[in-house]
Amino acid sequence: MSRAAIFVGLDVAKRTLDVAVRPMGETWSVANEERGVVELVTRLRTLPPTLIVCEATGGYEQLAVTSLAAAGLAIVVANPRQVRDFAKGTGQLAKTDTLDAAILALFADRVLRRRRSPRDAPARLLDALLTRRRQVLEMLTAEKNRLGIAPRPLHRGIRQHICWLERQLDDVTGELTALIEASPVWQVKHHLLQSVPGIGPIVSAVLLGELPELGTLTHKQIAALVGVAPMARDSGQWRGERFVWGGRAAGRIALFLAALFARRRGAARGRAGASWGTEASGQAVIPKRGR
Image (cartoon, rainbow, N blue to C red; front, side, top):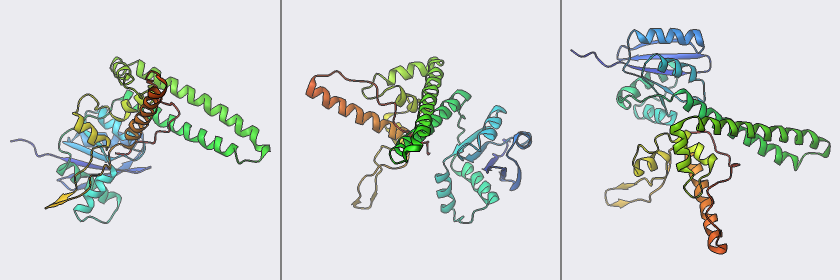
């Protein structure tokens, strides 16, 4: 007789990890630090669960996710909006850490029964470098804007900070390039992506980080994943307008910038007979992913 499936919801906060186990109904919590995560892994190994689900929290989940994955436990980092919509659909409107963990366990049971592989260490580092590059660009843009309105006595300090940020940007971009070139698989994809008009090294790096599924899905599936596939809004004989929404914002914006650049270069080529360029501006601010 096969063992009953066990699903675990893991609600992540800055200092705590709340756990709910389905169908047993057990709930408990540990500290969101190394010692607490060791206890979490030890307790879950005794089950072991069919699937563990937590929400993306901007980084607070990383220690638990990497430790659970290293222990060979199946874990998925879910989109918070999808989980909250699921909770509303079940009629669960109250919100506490324990209730959130229970909803995550139910979400794993009803929606995410199929196991998904977590991202490996190089993929997480690529994501961290892309995020850091975005942050540096945002600070650089803010300082340049501030320079235009600040009193003259402050200009020297702002210019020094701008120079420092520009060096940081070069360093992070160099680390990003080195990481991609160190991977034979990424290297091939990186150069293949840059063969497309409008896609340069930065947009290519964003696509590698945001859309690791590239090359494994159909064009319709990848379009839906990015959020550029028009969604039907029909009911009975009524046919509504199609809209694009959701998906991975950072990948979508990177593709938009590449298309815009390619269009402008195409127009310039038509006017002046110039050849196609393949390098989009490296100064585009790509926002953090939201799934």
